[in-house]
Structures are given as structure tokens and as C-alpha cells.
Amino acid sequence: MSATLDRLKELGLTLPPAAAPVANYVAFQRSGNLVVISGQLPFGANGQIDPAHKGKVGAAVSPEAAAEAARHCALNVLAQLRAAAGNLDDAVVACLRLGGFINTAPGFSAVAGVMNGASDLMVQVLGERGRHARSTIGVAELPLDAVVEVEGLFEIR
Image (cartoon, rainbow, N blue to C red):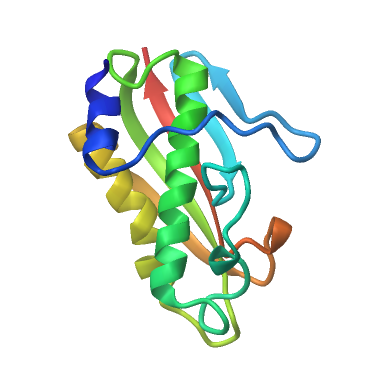
């Protein structure tokens, strides 16, 4: 078993299958040693978005539930990365950047704390290879009424 999958297991997590795109795009695109992962929604192990992860943070969704949704998004980013790279150990050099889109109620500005759910998981799973640059923005709507969407950029071998 891989060290990265072992770390996930220690966290009580399993890597889901890479989700199929829900529109006219590809889930990831590789160019040389770079892989861009398309925005991932907080699909759970059952392939559905938990109702607690739908809606607007700062209204019906708490910041804590939104951070948990961001964690699910990051797990789905890792699933796409494994599909692109073949494995999450030797093939992955670094997470270069994560981008987070947070479905916010008017006036909610604590988007960085929500995105920490994804950033923290990336570092927990990949260690120093998981430290990354990041952008986080609040948006008016997201697909399927998800509270969070996360995209990534990785260097691979």
C-alpha cells in the first residue's frame, strides 16, 4: 500500500473514485510535469453532495460545515490527481496551488477559514509536498448548490 493512502486511512478517509465531469470539460489536463485539476465539488463516498454541504455559508450552512465540505473537495482533487499521475507517492512532486470558490451569503467574508479545510487536508495527506499557494473567493452561486468548489495545480514526475 502507498504511504499517502496509509495517511488517508489514519485520518479515517478513503480515496473515492475520480468523479466524471458534469459538463463539457475534462477532469484534469496534463502539460509536461504540470497537472491542472478542474474544480471538484464536495461529493461524498456515495457520489452525492451531503445536504449539509449545500447552500450558502453564512446563511443555512455553518462555517464548520463549509470547511468539512472543502475537505471533501480536496479529497476529490486527490482522486483526480491519482487518476492523472497513476499514484500519489513517487509521481507527485508538489501541490503548487489550490483555488477555492465559496458559495457565500451577502456579508460573509471569512472565506479563508472555510478553505483551510482543503488546505489542511492537503498538508495532512501529502506532508511538505502539500504546502501550496492559494486563492479563495466568495461567489454568488456554485454548481448543484454546493457550498464549496476546489481546483488544484500540481507538479508530477
